[in-house]
Length: 223
Image (cartoon, rainbow, N blue to C red):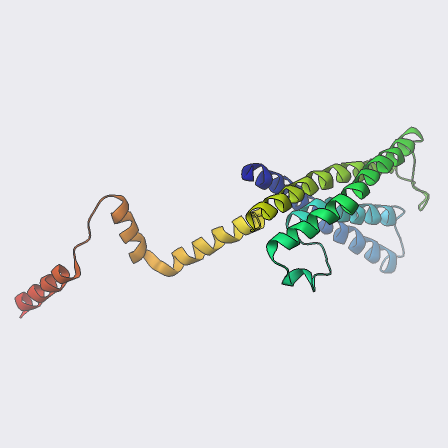
């Protein structure tokens, strides 16, 4: 089960990181528009439409990623002082009462919203070029599916925490643990790593007394 939970976390993370590149495209579009408008007195006819579509895409496609990292804003003054089981009970209640009904409504109405736009081959009314915008509206039900999938993962985590009294690991926790292990390995240095390799190969390190006697003998030979 934990592999499934972390697998969905990885999916949400991958999608969020891929669409995070929209910020680079958005920056380039806005920069081009500003330079063209004020330096060359030649504003584009497509800059506004492209910028709001890129921003909307970035905002929506990051939703499941933020949920997987527990990154959404919450009023947690009292929540922080609760034991994990009570936190999980409260989260599960809020997911059932508010999150899932809202996501189902978001998916259903988002699909109708896209379907109507597709039938009309809807175009933007904010610029003379009027780019087609139904592909942008298709993202609404897609985002609903991603949020529903990640929400189910979070509900399972709540149930497991209620049972065990501890929150299951998230992908961010696993990644952080990997970073800690790597940092500790760097601190321990090559000597400790060699000792671990020696133990793994079945090589027995000599006791401290033998090392001391050997060093004393070397010193006498040197004199």
